[in-house]
Amino acid sequence: MKIPSMLACVLVAAALMTSVARAAEAFPVSIQVDAAKQVGELKPVWRFFGADEPNYATMKDGQKLLKHLGELKPQQVFFRTHNLLTSGDGTPALKWGSTNIYTEDAQGKPVYDWRVVDLIFDSYVGRGVRPFAQIGFMPQALSTHPEPYRHEWRPGLPYENIITGWAYPPKDYDKWRELVYQWVKHCVERYGKEEVEQWYWEVWNEANGHYWKGTPEEWYKTHDYAIDGVRKALPTAKVGGPHSAGSGGKFMDDFLKHVSSGKNYATGKVGTPTDFLAFHAKGSPVFVDGHVRMGISNHLTAIDRGFGKIAAFTALKDRPIIIGESDPEGCAACQSPQNGYRNGTMYSSYTAASFARKHLLADKHGVNFEGAVTWAFEFEDQPWFAGFRALATNGVDLPVLNVFRMFSKMGGERVATTSSAEVPLDVMVKAGVRERPDVAAFASVEKTKIAVMVWHYHDDDLAGADAAVALKVAGFPADVHGALVTHYGVDEMHSNSYGTWKRMGSPIAPTQEQYAQLEKESQLTTVGDVSAVDVKNGEAALGFALPRQGVSLLVFDWGVGK
Image (cartoon, rainbow, N blue to C red; front, side, top):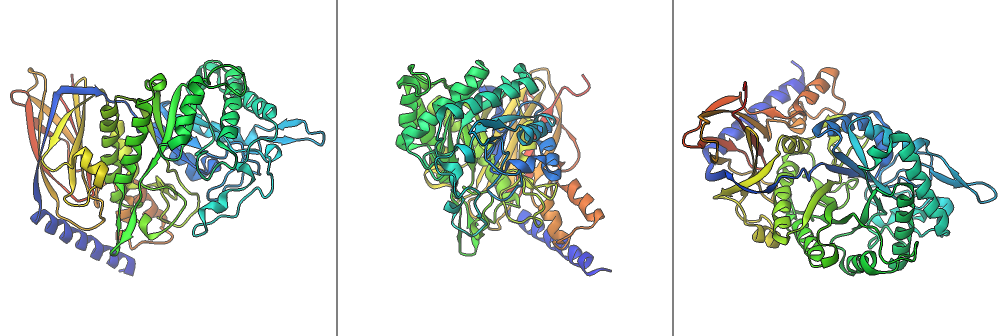
């Protein structure tokens, strides 16, 4: 017998023993769902993704992952990326990308080259994903500070090293507007007016942070000229911003005033077209006492403030809001001990718990919450499970992607849930999940289906007892006396390629057979077989064990065969 196989057997045995021990120590949790008590439309706010590096979308694993994203909700998934206007030869690198969309000839006349950006957008559209088109960054030929231009950043170096000539204002605003006009016009010609009308268009990224080397006023001017270029090419295009770092502070306040009642730099008129508003929100994990401790409080606090700021601005309070980057921390390409949550199920449970609270925060402020961008994609040809914030590694999906597969199975109306072990929203915003775990639920009803997502989350990445969940679901139609239940799970033993890889002995180069197994285990799988449950007086009940940092989705369907 080969040593890796022996090690795998030992790891499997250890995992089973640990599971039995957790189950013996399980603590009881009572969860109630009332499908008759609807609390609002369940918008698919999860269907937005993004990355710094646009060129990975054209590569083998990038295209494979895009296909998986497009399958979640065909033609309704969006992808946002930096560097679509950056100068360069299209070679990808960490925190970098380029399309060479704009250069100038010897006489200073614009030269447009759509080839690379077309490959990127073709990769999206051909796989059921639509562009969330970011107008940035500044082409070298237009930059007021063109040298140095391409950065040489790598993990471990100061983050600010990425800031070079692409982060400066345009030297000619009319040429900048014309570039945007020509690009949008080209997209309409290539993909069709009806398709491009579905896209989002926005200018830059976090201009109140590292990514902008001009003044706020220069950015508002850059924004206005770009939006004017978009609308000249496609008057019905969806445009917005400003994608501030955090809730934006004074920068966001001034932006809201500028676009609603200020003088438009490009047109001289009052205001700037604004179809949606966007800000960013990040958590703040740390490494303490030998383990990762997440900072979900920081993440939710930023969302709370951002929603509150927009809700208080009467002229724009009803605009759709997209949290343009919404993540456990701020750098997908960075590697460090505090980012050790990324490969396993902690990222999965964090995602379930945080998205549920985003809905509650939107309810609290009465805002029009349209989406939240998960800033994670893939990094081509890196070591297996290299520790980046990603959705896949070497073409194999990570556990977190299966939470989005769970989300895709929910729809219709959100319904009321309660749990004996949920951490209240105000406590989680203020202090996170630092004492008892957060075991709570998020549920929906549509036609003949009730879907209940349950998670077992804690900020501290430490072992703990299972939750023994007693789930009661009320609100079935009076004429329903039974349903089929499908139980999907993400935990150490289900829907978890990382767990499988570890049990294989963590091979640095999996064999073809191992790769096939990793692919299989990377998909969303069920916990047991589909089973029948009785429905009496409109209620059903069942129990199950939910491991720490695990996520379950239970789908009750009474329309099968009808």
